[in-house]
Length: 85
Image 1 (cartoon, one colour):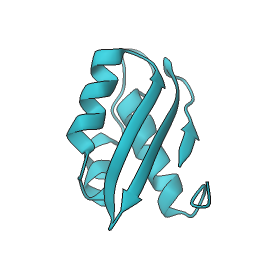
Image 2 (tube, rainbow, N blue to C red):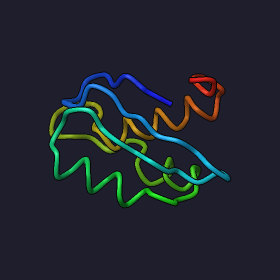
Image 3 (cartoon, rainbow, N blue to C red):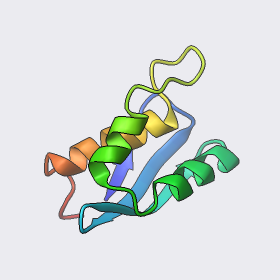
Image 4 (tube, rainbow, N blue to C red):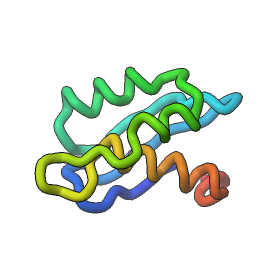
């Protein structure tokens, strides 16, 4: 699934979910080291656990962050948005 981010430096996030596990996470743009770190940390993680850990994280004074955007992308996936992409 490809998710277009809002309010952060990264432009989009692509990922897959297999057997309820998050896989193949890639951020387009953003802070390379941080986004690579987040992608590797959630690799193979249960989708609900990933959402629980990342939802609500803020970046500085922004109301969101790249990890929060990934959580929102995973929630959108669970709600059926983008499953056909």
